[in-house]
Image: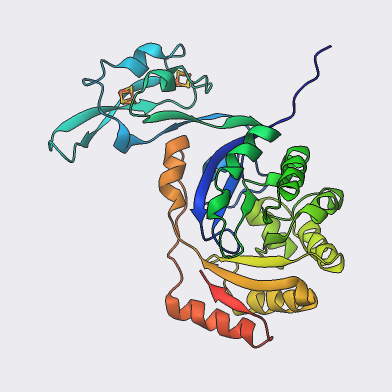
Length: 318
Ligand code: SF4
Ligand code: SF4
């Protein structure tokens, strides 16, 4: 019988990243996440499946391409939508609308959409295919840079992530894992020897509030952070600062106390102010409205930074 080859599902690979760990890095984004953060800036990362995405600004209009996508769709899921103004000609273009209730993400429309206004988000790689793609960027891994495996939650594809990290270490590449920390400890324990740094999210110290907003409790996340620290792992703690959720002084102080408990396992704490860039991305994959909030001011972020620094912690705002 033919042996099944292990594959992982990705939704993106980005080079020259300076946001995903030290130095210049290439980041592999895996699909699928058990959390449902309303502020997620990569909503296409949440589903484990391939998804049809649609970027209205790329659509040339049905007249220019003879309604190719509408004709290609076996489900009748593409219909005439609104119009958009062409920035060059200032003409109104008749664009489309995808009826998500009818679409089964088969991708037939994406095959005929030449400007890639329609495209399938999700691509399968074998371990070696991904490693070889990442190694192409090796010459750019400067100032302590390397590869970051991110998501979604990359540890929901545990065997694939483990194998990729192991191969990268064999090649002498610096590795980071960007994780929510929401998984079984055994999964983290297995990748620890091949992970130079964890980019570790802490969202709220109150488990009930955590669960109410992002759909899972925080106990496994906090427990895994303690275990990483005890095992000698290093963590860059990331705190998304979300108005009306976790931005109050009480929660920030509790988070600082927790980070203090982790000792020198914490290399730095990043305070990440909420932004609403994810909203337009939601519209690529869904018709449902998304809640938006007002981003915290610079002065408020500085205040939170000051609070955490009172605990002797290294803090940055990004
Ligand atoms: S989505 Fe693509 S194929 Fe469909 S009308 Fe727009 S450009 Fe043409
Ligand atoms: S992905 Fe398939 S079902 Fe969905 S709109 Fe495109 S052709 Fe239709």
